[in-house]
Structures are given as structure tokens and as C-alpha cells.
Length: 503
Image (tube, rainbow, N blue to C red; front, side):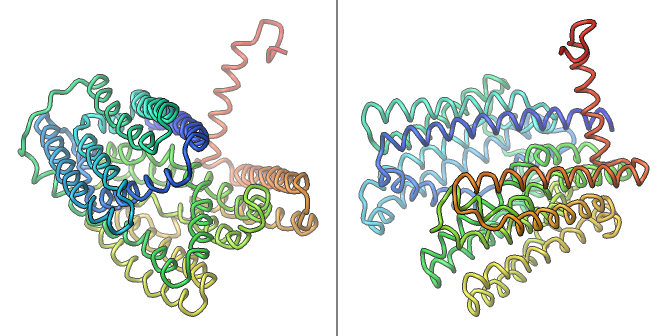
């Protein structure tokens, strides 16, 4: 178990480094291209990429997850996955290209036709990628995945910037995307040698696992987007802007704080699927760790949402503050049960996950419609809070079915984090009340910095105090102390003799 935990930590570090570098390259690319191109260029390409994202999500076959779940996949399994992904890429590419003319006519921009043809080709390229890449995650080897992700992004950025410098055209955005896909395909076969061939053997076996995941993806895609469509239709584009921007900002801290760990859990749980007791312990440890990280990140952003929005976006975006405050807290609390997804996939219970997603959708739909109909944007926010809370309960029930862990047992692993976050929220709220609302940029910076420092001190101090009072039970604190001890020993070992700490 300790060896698995160490591999998960190393994998999380590689994923963190990968996401950090890819996001940095993306920011650099955006800033440079924004100076070389006009906003209309970004809007034109966004039309094509948005439509493609929806089509891709709805038609996702989830065959890679089936490979991770399989105990011992053979070459024929990989050939079958490659065959289906290539066929899907070709079919979607042709359909997307066929829709280019009516889409260009509908939006009144003939340039969209060429953009959609090119993006259709990029989908076809993505279907040719090496299916063995997913085995890096299954084997918890992430440095090669780091190379693939960063190389693909770097090549795409370089191509986009060069074309923009020469021609100052929206094609810089499109061809950069295609260049990234070409790089992904070529490098994937270089890092993991594989000679694919058309094979349909084992397809039924793989599909029996991935079919329910595909249906869940369809439900989740609709579930994630129908509220935005309703707001845009009934409340207007301004309220939709507040809602979408606020929702994205609310999700950001929880997602970025926990994704490096959660991305490693499906393959990790899969390795323990045949040992129920070890799987239960691994789930509780992982879930407690994720929640311990997500709670201060999400609730912390909710507490300082107003000064952050004023400082970075201006007063015209203040209506988005309520969205951030409500949803950032809900997203953080939802980590109490979100690991039910990789857990269910590891155990092959994908039909159960689909049933849950469908039930959540049909419960969520009328609540959100009613909230928005009677109370507008505020009603939508309240409905999201209510449905988010109900989702936590649904996830806890799923975990109980999968592992036998009772709801109180699941919550008990997080009791210190929950008490600490309540204490932190109370302390920062008192500080904010005394601080009042600053009117200057410097005051806003001071308000955010002081709240962050106080919140971190209260959360960490309360958590460690409770851990010591409970006689140091196994939990996130144990992992932190172990990591701190390892870091301190390595630092001491590098220090010159007679000069502790190198000072």
C-alpha cells in the first residue's frame, strides 16, 4: 500500500508539472496571438471548436478506460481499440465536414466552411493516436505522458505563432490545432512503439464495459450544458455571461487542486479491485486527501470572491460574485463523493454509474427550470446549490453500494477537514467584516492576501491540532508529515557539514 501511495504521489507531481507547463504555454500563445490577430478571428474559430467539442463528447466511446479496467489486455485488444477510434474519427470528420456548408450559411460567414473542414481532419487525426498511451496511466508511469502532452502543446503553439506572424490570419489557430494533433500521433508511436492493424476481435468485450460510460458521457454533456442554453434563451446573454464566467471561476480552484491526484485513481483502484479490504482503505485515504485539499481551495475562493473579481475583472462583473461564492463551496464539498466515478469504473460497475447520472439529471432538470423561472439568475444559483447537495448524497450512496462503507464511515474520514473548514470560514468572515470593502487596488490586494494568510493558518492549525488530539490517526496529515520528513531529510543531507540547513 505504501509503495502504491508513493507511486501515486510521483504520478501526481508529473501531472501537476504537465498541467502547469501546458497552461503556461497556452497563456503565452493566447497573449501573443491576441496581439497579432483580431477578436473576430478567435470568434470564428470558437464557433467551429465549440460545435466539435459537443459532437466529440457525445460520441466518445470510452474504450481507453476499458483497457485500463482489463486485467491483461493483449495486442488484439489494442488493435480493436485503434480500429474503432480510427473509424469513429473518420466518420465524425466526414460528418463534421458535411455540416460545414449549412453551418456557414446559418452563421452567415463563408469562412466557417474552411474552418470546419480543417477541424474535421483534425478529428480524423486524433483517432489514429496510439492506444497504448493509456497504459502509461494504468501502470502509473506519468513522465512519458508529460513528454507527450508538453510536446503536443509546444509544437501547436510554435506553428500558431509562426503562421500568425507571417499571414496574420485566423488559420494560425486552426493549423496550430492540427499541428498539435500530428505531433500527438507521431510522438505517441515514438515513445510507445506499436504497429496497428484493423482488428475487431474483443470489441464486444471492450464495448460491454465502455457502453455505459458512453451513455453516461451523453447524459453528463447534456446535464452540463442545458442550464446555459436555458439562461441564454430566457434570461439573455448578459446573465449568461455572469453565469458561465462565474461557474468556470468557481470550478477552477477545486479542479486544479485535486486533478493531479484524481487522475491517478482509476488505474490505482483498478489494481486493487480484487482485494475489497485494501480497496476500501485506499478509497478512504484518497477521498480524505482530495477533500482536505479541495475544501480550503474552493471555500477560500468563495470567501474572497468579491475582492478578486473587483481586482481582476472590474465592477461590471460584480453580479458574478454570487455565482462564484455559491458554486465554489458546492464544488469543494462535492469531493466528498466524486471519487465514486473512478471507483465504479475500476470495479466494472459502469451501468450503476449511468443509472446515477440519469437519476441526477431528471432530478436536477425540474429544480433548475423552476428556480430560474420564478427567481431568475438568483433562482438558478439556489437551484445549483440544492442539486449539488443532492448529488453529494447520491455519490455517497453509490460508494456504499460499491464498497460497503456506510455514509457515516465515509464522512468520518473527513471530520477533521470539515471542522477545520468551518473554523476557517468563521475566522475569515470576521476579518472581512472588520476590513469592510476596500476601494483601492492596493486595499483589494491587501484584503485578499490577509484573508488567504489567515485562512491557511486557521485551516492548517485546526487540522493538525485535531489530528494530535485524536492521537494521530491515518489520514491526510500522515501523508503531509511523511512528505515533510522526507523533504527535510533530503535538504539536510545536501547541507554542508557543520552548517545545518546550509545556513
